[in-house]
Structures are given as structure tokens and as C-alpha cells.
Length: 322
Image 1 (cartoon, helix red, strand yellow):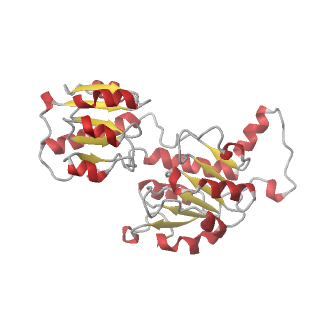
Image 2: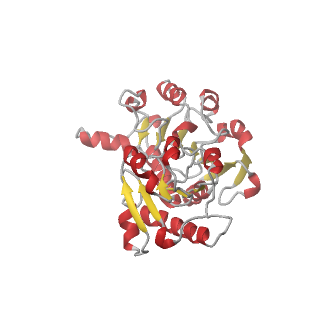
Image 3: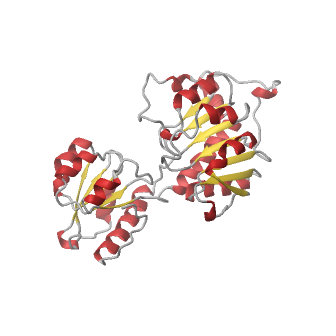
């Protein structure tokens, strides 16, 4: 049973977000502390009843987490947590799904626009003081989005909002989701994940907005890249593990797809020796798709709702995972 409010201690663990400062502004009277590194979390986890964390988490921390009752993930993804280990210890887990759905979907649309309007190339030209002339070669010219087909893999909160934004640009939207009974939302049609290969040849843009699971690991690979049009673009705002990076690099280098934009990598930060850095038809952002001025408050809203449910003895948490 989670301790009462006056006996509870929360550990906020994140290298950048100021979660404790935002929490203190709420004047809850709940004790808390902040750590910025994995080593600091390992050293102090024995003091915490609740940990608010994502990327700093390691399963080895459980050995010293004597008081831990609940983990609130700072992120929508929870693949860094071993659910069986948590369940065996009676530790509850909830995700932050939806906490940045607006930000990520805005970012995805921004990447699509950057690719089609050649904004990275314009910035590169600016840094070189080059005023590019009008494009005679159609393959080198900017384009518009109207009547283009967007294939969204993962039609959850983020994917559905991407579909909604794309419709405002007069795009045709095909949605792919694990459970088609969830509906098509703002997409024109919805299909099962097993239909992806057959749908890829229709797409001018393929956007990944899905969780990383066994079914979606390396879902973009040599085979699926070969199914895409040579004029198509890939955008990944999901997880790095959803894309086979070597296969993507080869496809971009050989011109088998027109280009790509990725906000995530298999290993982050992306290693300086990665061939992805030097591909002229690849646009990289450093996992900033979910960044927003409201991130801390959005996470804390979920945390406080779940604390309320735990104190009330409710079995179901908001965004419950374990």
C-alpha cells in the first residue's frame, strides 16, 4: 500500500526536466527530491516510494528500491522497464502517454514540410551565403502536399493528430494500427499492421508514430524500404528501434527513397561515427519532437491523478502499464 501523503517521498529523475521545481510550485506538501544522473538515482533510490523517470532507469536499481511502490514514466514509451520484474515486486507502473501528443504531431508535420519544401537545404545554403536559383530540374524543386498520400503507422493519439493536420494540407491519409477496431479517426482508411507491405507503394510519405514492440521492431527494413516509391519520404517520430538504421542508410545513399527525417535513433545520443550524419537526404533532430514548455506540468498532472487513485485503492491507474 502506498504511504499516506505526509509520509510519501517522490524522486524525480531526469537529466534536463525541472520536475521537482514545477512540483514544488503546486504546494502539495509531499516530500520530494531531484536527481540528474543514473548514478545519483542508484545512490538515492532507497529513499523513494515513488520514482518519476524514463531514460535514466535501469532494472538493477530494483535491488535497492526497498520502499518503491510506484513508477510514473516521464515518457509515453515504457520499453525501458521490465514489466515482469516490477509485477513480481508489486511495483505499479504508468506511462505518460498523451503527455506530448500535440508536440510530437506538430514536429512530425514540421519534418514533412521541411522535406517537401527543402528547408534543410535552404538553411545550408544560407550558411554558405548561396542564393539558389529557380529549379529547372523537377527532381530538385520544392513541392506541395496537396493530393499526396500519407501513410501513418500507429494511429494512436499522436498518429491520429498527424492525420488531422495532414488533412488540413489536403493530403490523403492511410492509417495502420495494431487493432483496427479502434477506428480510423481522422484518416481516410485504417488497416492492420500485416497490410503494411501492400500499402507502402501507395505512400508519398511514411510516418512512424507507433510504440516499440516486438511487432514494430525494425518494421522499416530492407524489405519494406524496397516496397516504397523512389520518390517517397520516411519520417520517424516513434522509436529508433522501429527502423533498421543500416538498411535506411543504404536506401538513402543509393537513392532508393527520396529522403528521410528522423527524431530518434537506436542508440542515443547518435554516435559521431554514425553514417547517418553525413547523408544529404537525411534530416536529423535530436529526439526533440516531444519538447514543449508544458512538458513538466503535463507529466505532473498524470502523476497527481495516479497518486489520487493509489490512495483511494483504485485498481486501475491512468495510462496503467503494470
